[in-house]
Length: 57
Image (tube, rainbow, N blue to C red; front, side, top):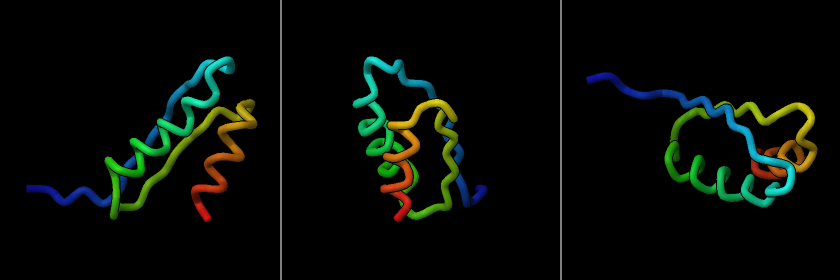
C-alpha cells in the first residue's frame, strides 16, 4: 500500500460558466482533504485566480 501525500488538479471551465469554479473547489477540497494540494487554474481566468486565492487563505 502506498500513502498518498499530495494531489494536483488542472481543469478548464468555460468563461460563461465561471460559477462552476466554486463547485470544482468544493469537490477538490473534499476529495483531497488532509493532504498537500496543487492546482493550476488558467492564467487568463481572473475569476478562478481570485477564487483560489480566497480558498488558500
